[in-house]
Amino acid sequence: MTIDGKKLQYASLKETDCNTSTQTLIPAIDGKTVVVCDIFVSAKKNAVDAEISLYDGSTEFFIWFPEYTSSSINLKAPIHLGAGNAFKIGCDSTTTDFSVLATYYYL
Image (cartoon, rainbow, N blue to C red; front, side, top):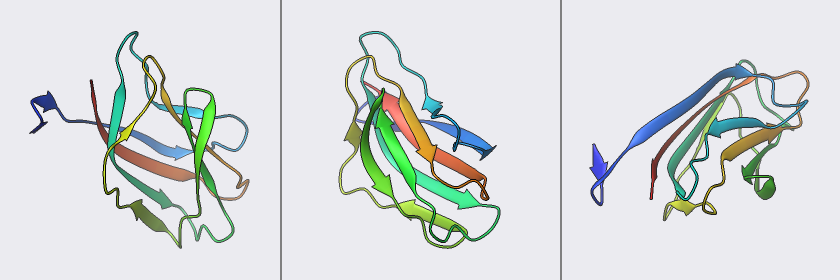
């Protein structure tokens, strides 16, 4: 599948423990911008009181409070990261491991 002539890709992390450090979901490519189209999160158990942080490289730009065991962000427009930056996630839950799926392309 393509969007504006760019190949749509996906990246996933399965049952990641992102509490101790941020995890890279989409790697950086020098001189390229990551464009995130969709994000979906699931948890092994209810994610009540958990929060997931999204990062543009090392800069946190969004805090998400997923509901229950699965949640998605319905983006009105794609998220354009800074050129050469990776898309990373972090979380604050020590009791819940998250699986994350994102669709994206490089610009």
